[in-house]
Image 1 (tube, chains in turn orange, green):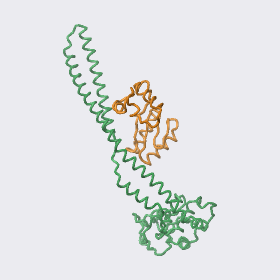
Image 2: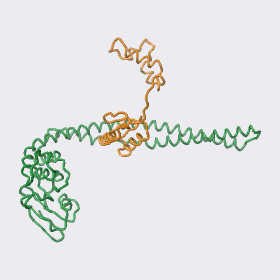
Image 3: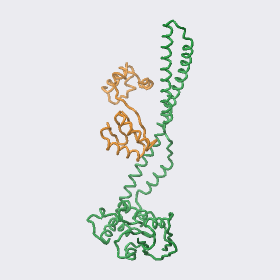
Length: 112
Length: 271
């Protein structure tokens, strides 16, 4: 999908109007951003916005995450275990100490 | 005021210029100091003149905004003014560098396409060299061509990798530059909210006088003064405001230009 983020009031207004006019191409709308369908028309809308508003429009291409394909098992397990921790106030870095769970720094250093 | 056009000179507080070959637009331009075939000697217009200084059928008018400007012409201010000024100062101090990564995107794409083309050429030449050998030939010329293509592939691959790195760096620069734009937008939103609040406060100072003025405009009176037609609203706002510069009227609400001038308490040019 195409993520369009606006950085000016005028660009935000144009995005809002485009989203209203082309609901079928809008996957999701957020205040000043929108996810557009990964179609030529979605790209057309996004590029038209950038042609008008230049640097005030950021366009990124996103894709759904399948964690079973893209995320190593220890990371997935750590997320589940941390969500299920006994003491809600324990920060993750502390939680991971002395366990098999990866520490935050090494996770930050590894790209998916 | 004094109006000069093509040898004719008119003087007075209320002037009918329908006999002169000038348009309302020409007169307004002259009042506002812009280039015009007609010359006017009259007090300089303030901000309110932009709103209600040229009254004609079909004119656009944002009633509340114009009323807020009218309130300011009378010397009213809003409690938000200082904060609006502070936001303006912050906004003008903010610099928002361009964050275009277009050149880097284009270069990365072009280098990628080029690499693909050379890679295909290398594969094709390899196939032909192998086929020739299988036929028992010694394809020296083809082999030389292949060697050249392999060298070229290595060069374009290096260039493509460099272009990709440049793009990654450009994206990071863009992310930082967008922080400034983010701040600017937040400030602009803040200013817009403050201006809206200021406008409401200013309108409150004069809405009673405005409603009375709408009732007093010759012609039918609307039930809601904020739903008056633009000509009625503009005349009423003009009556409320302190208009020093001549008002240009292209409407037939008054018996004479003199009646209009005394009703508006402002100089009037009638067309």
